[in-house]
Length: 137
Image 1 (cartoon, rainbow, N blue to C red):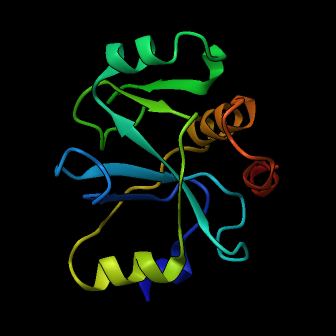
Image 2 (cartoon, rainbow, N blue to C red):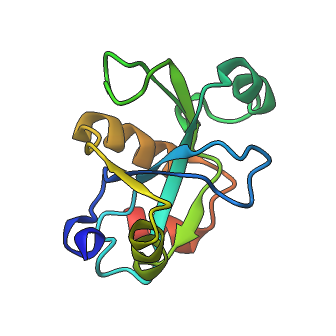
C-alpha cells in the first residue's frame, strides 16, 4: 500500500478527523523520525485559527506554536498554525484503511526545515508525554 512504503517524517495527510468538532478535513503532518518502525505514527495538525490558538497557548513555550505560510508550504491555501502541544497517534494500518476507502489524501511532503520546527515544538511542549518525545528524539 502506498502509505506503508512512503510514510516518513514530513509526510502530510489530508482527512476529516471524527473526534474534531469541525467536519472539515485537516492537514496532518508526521513528526516521528521512524514511523515505519514505531508502533504508531505521531501526527500534528494545522489550523487556520491562528489568533485563537495563540491565545489558548499564551503560557506555553513559543516554539510549541509553528506558523506556516503558503510561501513556505504551497499546499496550504492560507496562513496556518500548528499547535505542537497536541498530537494524535494512528497506526499505519488505520491510515492505509482511510486511504483505501477514499477518506484520506496524500499531500506533498513538508520540507525538512519545517518538520524540524514541528518536532522541536513537540519536544519543547510540557504537555507531551515522554514516550512520545522518545519517538522524536
